[in-house]
Image (cartoon, rainbow, N blue to C red; front, side):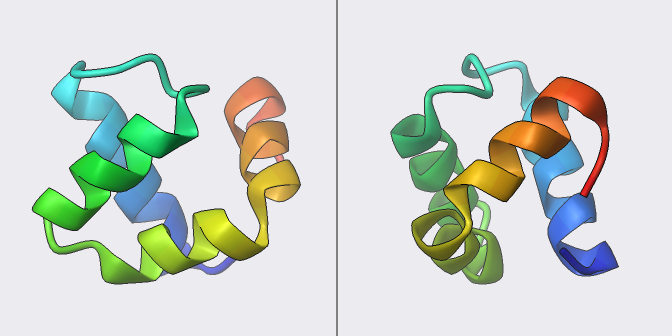
Length: 58
């Protein structure tokens, strides 16, 4: 996970619009915010994403 993806995850979290474990909604919000890298990342690396959300680790 690169810094750009981390930043996009944190920006989506800051909106407070969804539970961050609801990845389909996270993807929709990311798309609306034009964070297309995060949308693709969630398709390919969902487990790494969940680990980051749970533990703050990559």
